[in-house]
Image (tube, rainbow, N blue to C red):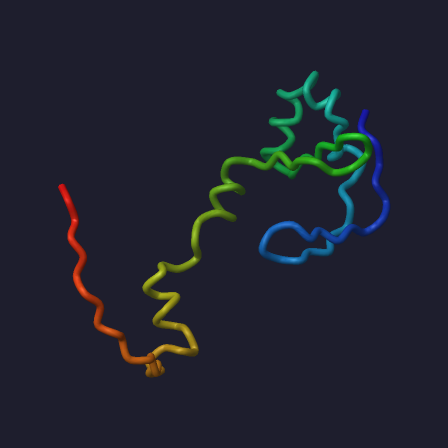
Length: 107
């Protein structure tokens, strides 16, 4: 079955820097094994993320559809985000615009 990864790992990809404990033995699959047992990987991913390694290094994570929707759905609308911003209501000082001549556009 899959190999065990014992130490903590720092993940630098993506918008956040995350330090996490490595997954348990049953949650880590070598790529060849994951390909051969894809249905098992997917079944287990419904309850817990499954980690796939290539040459002993983490390469991919299989998660449930519900978890994917949960982490990709915005928690608030863009309008609410701006309404709750600490900069809401702050007046910006913009430099004056330089009038430009209109250019011709051929249709």
